[in-house]
Length: 137
Image (cartoon, rainbow, N blue to C red; front, side, top):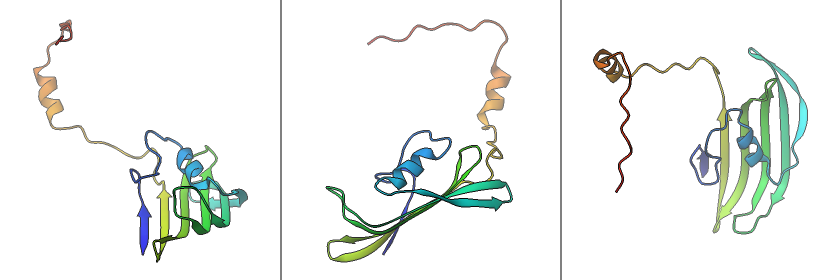
C-alpha cells in the first residue's frame, strides 16, 4: 500500500505558504535534518537537506519507521522539492507513506481573464461609485 500526500490532506500545512517552508517544517518534525551539500540545477544552485530516523513515536499516531526526508531549497529560500517517506502499520497491515512536493516554473504562471470581465467592463461607466450601506438583519 502507498499513500500519496497532497495539500489538503489531514496533517498537511494549509494556507498561503509562498516559500514551502511550512511543508519543510512539517515534514522534518521529529527528525534531525542536516545540510547535505549543494546541487546544480538549470535554475541555479540548491541546498540539499536530508534526514533519517529509525523510528518516530508520537501519541495518537501510528509509529513511523524507516523515515527518510530529502529536500532542496534555492538561494531565495524557496523549497523546490521535498520527499518524505516512511513505513507504518495500520492494524496488522504494513504500509508506506510518501509525500512529494515539487515546485517548477516559478513566476511563469498566467491566469486567463474570465469571460465575464469583458462584459463587466463594457457595462461600466466612468464617474463616482455609489456607496451602498451594508444590510442589517
